[in-house]
Image (cartoon, rainbow, N blue to C red):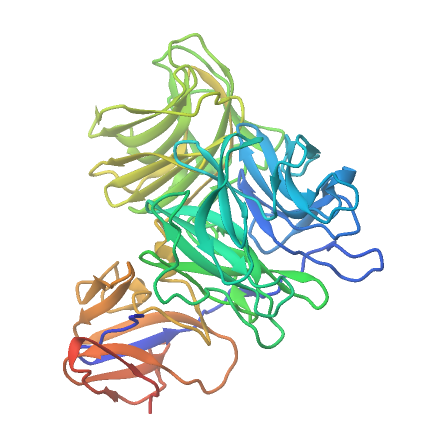
Length: 604
């Protein structure tokens, strides 16, 4: 049962419009789209987006009568630059649904191509490889796995999984390396009829798979999702779940074959999918928000939407000098080479730790991203390179460093001048530290989560740090450093402040915390409770306001439905931007109890 809103006393719902920043709209138009030999538009079907070193790369299916795979790049998920053909071999003719994975210095493309047999219409997956996201990718295998729409997921332990179409369902195969696929297993993910286009992510210890059903040229092409405690089997949809992306009427139809990508703010998730262009297919992007374990898409939309939010601080080092945004602590020889890459090349013994710190500081809760590779290391036992965060002063900060000699991640926190336990976690066998790797740090309260190349490797609890500067560090190591950023958002909490499209559904718990009576977090006048299926609802609050950010597609008169439970009569009023009354106080009759839910369909 969906639980949107509980009203126990009088309250006001305030809707806030975005002041500015509405820029992109679906479908997105990218330059140099695929076209048939006849000139007819083919477009961007089956879109997949890879983020590498702070840049997004878009790959799409190839028109059936041409070889090659196209690639575009963007820094913001909106403005796309065509980068050319990243694969050109004849075998790539009509390449379906290419997906690219970065691992240990190489990029692996998985795409469904026609099998080798003359005259066949059957497809199997091949693996292509490149040292760059823009290619050239060259085929490394013949047909390996029958079917289409392959998707690779890498677990926290470094285990690879390959998902693809099965017999009306989604199959998975464990991989022993990027080219070797094990026996197929049925994940349990299935729609009535045909099922394709899987994408798997992990969130809060749970695995989520989105997948598409119905025929690709059906107006009712759609996206569902299922979840499991295992990456392999047991995927089931949420009870009474409807499709999370579907529109079978009007011009914006045939929505499906999505991928999921994290936004530039390091915290928000986006669903990337195609729609019918009649002819062809177009690229689309809509925001994902979470209510506990429940995934929701703020869409599909065709009206203007706010551009994806950017981080509070970032640096691509596209200049010649460090400038005033950075300060060295502990010496070292820091500089920028080729107008694109930060470096530190002074080496020495284990006592020679060098830091370069941003002059901007995070809030108490934050997410930070660091990209780095080792060029050379000294002769000490444990040369290190890594990230600094929560830096208040030289007596209070945290570090997460990579140790090439021991093949591991190490973290240590200094609090009031005393170091905590140095915690170490092994990294996958064969790690090449001279290739680019990413460290991601999430800080939520006293909890820190440390990721390496997307794998959650450590969770630690440290009091009295939180906000502070970020930066890079080396010990007896010459290292290069790439894109670095932080955002004062973590764990998906940016979903509350996201502008929800109207028409559309708004979850009661997605109120804007900074727009309510209490200005921080889950204010003490609001109580949130867990519902039956892992999502949450507003269960009680004192007299006051709930503020929601909304984005109305066009001016007009809208019907409003409120789902609520109330042991006694309650009252509700809608206001706009805390000043314009949209309704009078409207009575919500008692439903007979705080656990008895009803719909109020009209406000008068």
